Image 1: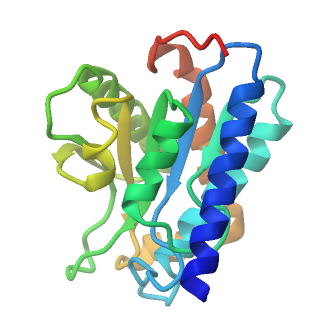
Image 2: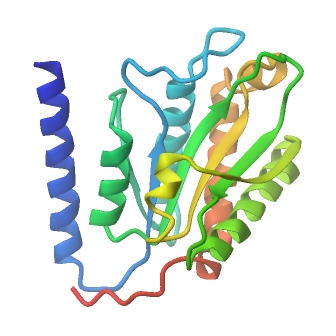
Amino acid sequence: MKKVFKNVSFVLLLLKMCIIFGQETVAQKRIVIDVGHGGKDSGAIGINGIQEKDVVLNIAQEILSLNEKSETPMDIYLTRYSDTLISLLDRTKLAKSLDADLFISLHCNHSDNQNARGIEVYVSNNESHYLDDSTWLAFQLQAALNKELGFESRGVKFGNFQVLRETADFCPSVLLEMGFLSNWDESKYYQKSKNLVITSRVLLECLMKNFTKYGNSRNRDN
């Protein structure tokens, strides 16, 4: 029953987004923020017990809140708005249904080495029309988090993650690993709500600053 309810909820969300999409009269670019894990999939467990699924959801929700309060809010949607597990396929399906111009997947890292630390940003290892845009944005996000938060940069890397693989030919897409929850300092950082707000602000400002630099140039005459 829970599985059925989850699927129904996702379908309703998808229909709602499609209705909004159909009613738009002004062409806009859209950002889909993929909130990693959720539900029974906790993702990484921090050295202090915090869970990746909660950290990324709190950051994504704060991005939405800050965006709504801005003078020129962007068109942002999340793949999940609560502690639910959405399949990887459904996440990319949502982005395609919304005709997204950018897909950014939020995660936190984990390592058996508790000294491992820093930011990693992944782009698809498959050649695509949007690879240059994805790589450029990945470097901007990494630089912003390094400059504003002091997180070490571990580089922009290529990966075969499903959410990247299935969006690479459709729009620029990146997967952001926002530090290691297995590292005491970084796990403790995300334990404080004020730091979640700061991280969200940095990410949103980076997207706003660079919004015209990337994204799909397709026209939307709906």
